[in-house]
Image (cartoon, rainbow, N blue to C red; front, side, top):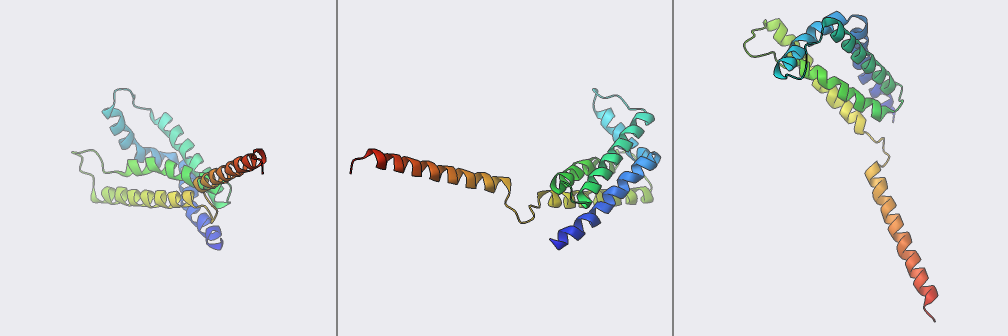
Length: 170
């Protein structure tokens, strides 16, 4: 219990920090996302290349959602839902961090930064998934459903037994 109260806010700091940074100064995030978005657009005919203004709005909305979900997790408001949302929101960051298109030769500094972002994004996605499935010592939905079925079955067989006993002459 105490560990959760400490660990969740600590883990949330990265999400809140990244989200607020994307909202406040989206230009660096747009520059980081642009190669990934362009690569995705070039692979499909159904998408058109978004303008920098549209990409900036997407980055800011994504940042706001990330910061809000991080705050919800930190304050324990729907922590499992917030953690699973954070895991889903972090996947695009991990995907954008995958090495660039073949043929490009980025500098060692750029490659190192992309690798570090990828590892960090994957690590926090994993942490958010763990927090998302944490039942806090309480039984999960599948256990509750199984227990309810057992109780219903027991009640039905008891009712049938009592009904047969009432009908059968002694």
